[in-house]
Length: 279
Image (cartoon, rainbow, N blue to C red; front, side, top):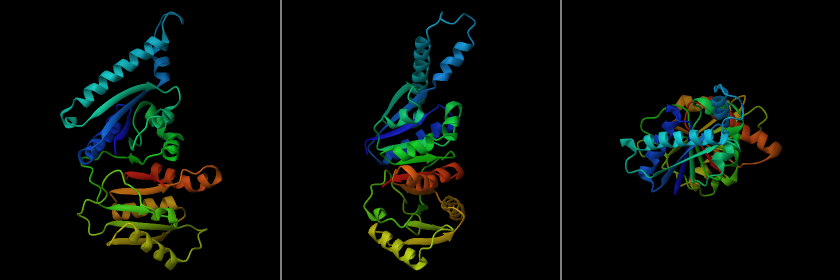
């Protein structure tokens, strides 16, 4: 892994994503790209408070001033003692192309981002941008909901479907389960009202999946719920999962609406960190 992308609106919560990225960097030889997107409306708002007539000021110059200020703030953040020895690059841009596109246009091996924050990021997560990043990112996406002091996920919940692509080898962006748990992972399959798969067949398939991953000690839970997302969130709370791992194909059209909505619903309603892995 070479680059971890951390979008930030400079709020405490979004900067917690930076702390987690730094924790990952300490175990992986990688650099962090700390990205701040200056909202275009911030420039317009600043200008609306100026008393002189329209046309007597330069919007582009004002935007550049906001970018310069943001770069200075990012420099102060990265100079903090807790980030010494961590290679961090900073970048600031405007959101002319949209927040999601600003993130997705930067090459990265992992995206670490907070689920909500202040200013534009609150609106960002209330719209389809969350789903856009998850859907179109070509790398794993780690979404943080609450501040985490020491990111060492040990109790791992893998929410799975009966999809043979899951049996293919996948490179996780950081170590899952650091050895203190008695099991390597918790597998969950959620039956919804329209699901008529045979329970024992599902259990057998998950056992094959665990074998393909080299897991010797694991737990299998097969639950029923109104939706897959509700079942995942409920079980994660029950076992007090440190992280939920979801898998997405980045599909389009109706198939995406049926499958992609599960990840979006989990992200919107759980307080657990969520790692989205693209198959």
